[in-house]
Length: 248
Length: 168
Image: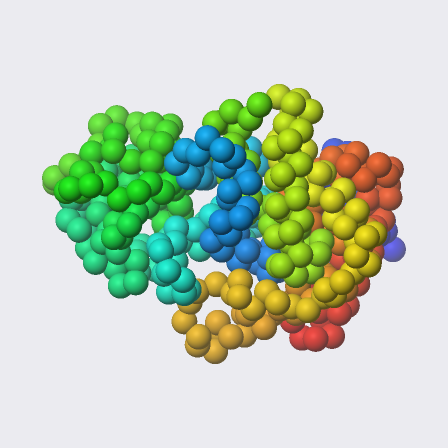
């Protein structure tokens, strides 16, 4: 018989909550006990399932009454800064190399988020959704971010005209794009970074639609987005050939 | 006085606050009531928050207290209907999507049937990623109790979801 590992210890192990020596002991037992390893995987998957089950609420528009309370009397622009929320999330320990990648995605589930919704209602108007592993841009918008050059307005049904303002690289060599979605009454600005086939939303903000023609210089965006871009960008924005090359 | 940055921080936390409250109350209408009361209390008492400590911890602690107060008064007026339907994510309605939503509903229902003292650990540790120490401090219980309650909750969930054929 090997050392026993109770459910209680196993759960604490999966959450990285045991002392180092105990983490190592459990890991060693897991390597030799397939039944226990299976139990550990099921318990870890359950955490993911719970996060997924509750993730949709993160992507819902915030009711005005809640927004109004936090906004207080001296109202300013609506701002959501995903980058800051991400920076605050817990950097947890994890003792089981096999589950390292999963740990990253589990921890990433802890993220403040709000979708970009245009006026009106209906699910097809969302351009970003929250999942257990973060807030990502919906597929039809992601397709535009993956292929289009900056500067052209592309209509997205039910949402508005999407224009990419800026393309740039981050210090960890991710490709990011700042964009605006213009509807009749408002402009939603966002910045998203490519993550495989997906685009993860780093920040977004909403402001009233600018009068007159749409300007898309990086300085002309919701403050949260400008701040996020400042924090992410390394070097100059990619333009022309460089931009197209980076998208390939 | 609440400054602009603090207001923005509060607004950015609303989605997570609603999720947290939703896990506690079991339905979105109550969750939004709890969230609103939490924001109101936070705005009123912002000077009690110590700058440098985590705003989210402070807010969630307020939310939990409000939830407990409300439940005492209202003895569970609305019950635990899954009126989360409206929160289902946009997406195609193919078989995979329908299946996924069904699993999510089962998981939410299973979480909501847990005893309160277990449910709050799911909300703080699993959904919000708190450490056991942080959860123990908020609930004012020993860390060993956090461990045993959480593992009990997860064992119950595992049995129930396995029986229903949902994941885990």
